[in-house]
Image (cartoon, rainbow, N blue to C red; front, side, top):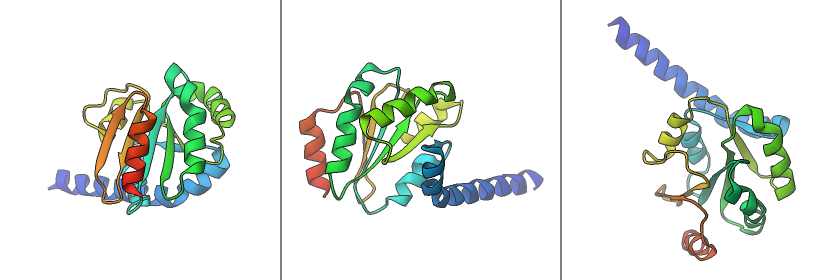
Length: 168
């Protein structure tokens, strides 16, 4: 009985934290330049953008492909009306300054940005796609109806354009 009650209280606290974080993210993104991406963040992001096409792109400063295409992602986000973009930096806190510099250089400072805030990154990967093992770049394409397609590696312009055109 006590264990069930404890589990129920923990679950309620987790849901309340996610709900509060959903409303705090815009302010956190302005004040800290990036919002913390932790357990439950992916689902909260999906809920916050429900009913709209959403692209969540995960990247790292240690990923050569990620860095080389980051400016293209920034341009795509600025020039693609009707599609929401969220960028998630997967680097540890020790690389945050480098990540912020890359975001600024790529024109992503005004975008919705998150950064990993949980050292147990495997659980963050699993919440997005239970087959994802942390390979980067990684992109989640979420249709307005909530259907999810994930892609590991660089996306071709044709594949991305096709998905965007089909979801607007």
